[in-house]
Figure 1: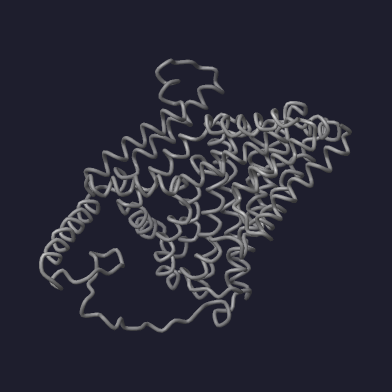
Figure 2: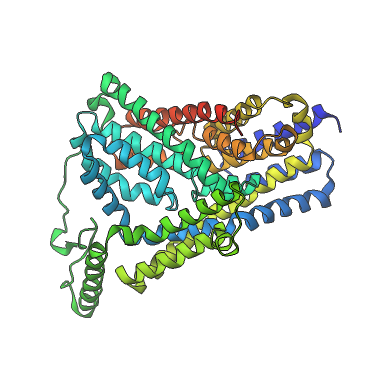
Length: 479
């Protein structure tokens, strides 16, 4: 088949995936499989090979990152249950003060808390950020909302063990330790510069509290007599004396929850986060030893990402039992399994599309045009990811699809796959808008209008996207 035909069919396949998701509201998983099947059949792979490539692509990426994603999400779910995030934000406030809070919060989220499912982390941290906003200044809501958006989105695709970063590393065959190190090198300046740019704009009059913030009036719950607070978490439950044996059971459960909550608060914060920090340290150690060409069988084993995250998961589980009890640990694990299922399947079918693109021969074709030019393919993968994200609204789908298009040409160019992963992650951040669940969560939880959220979330994360690719391009000169 001619090069032009392959290029046309690949374009049609990607466009069809976007159209199915955006226009006809098909599930992204189904859309990606349909796009893969179309591409395989129209580029001459045949029915049997097309099915084999789709299945193999799914299986290969699951073998690479399936357990890693599951372990990361489970750790995050248990940290959430232990209240580690609320305590961490409080510690940051005491150490850095309110004026530096946007930087401290965004950098902490982007570099340390990626294992927590994005929506869950946002729901936990947004109320705390909103309470801190008045202390930051007149544009405190804008600065804290932007800090949250930038930290959350950058962490998920640029830093291990964020699910997007794990998926990109598995798809492109990037050692996880290397992805961790280079992701850290990229994400810190990206977040800091982006938050600084947005803070400058807001303090120079680009934020109008009257038009960009919602103004709520507190209301009293009608059935207040039948409600009581649940020990500080912000929710309500029926009063324990509201009725017979049920009330006694509720009272006993509540006493257990409050006791567990106090136990969690009594534990040092460093203890709650220690297993996660140990996992990241082990992965980074393995990568550094590989670069230094130092070999030690024991260190090599425990620094393998799968083993390192397993150690972190087991450690977090033990800490969880000590702080909140076995019941709540099991509850968190069940929640984590529920959250990780869709991520795993979506990552797998993203690998199917990438494998089909590679089997169709697109890599050889693109390699003819990009030989000895590193900047062009990195800009191309950024643009593809950005366009896909604008259309689809999914950071993970856009990053994986864009990286899959360029992955086959990396060996031809001598281009380090980690650069493609970072460029794809950077592009997938562009224009987080109304198709994203993050957009609407930030609007409601931070008390913004749609206009305000377009500034803090859409523009803020887009600035981070541009800053990131501008930092990735010079890295291609030394890698």
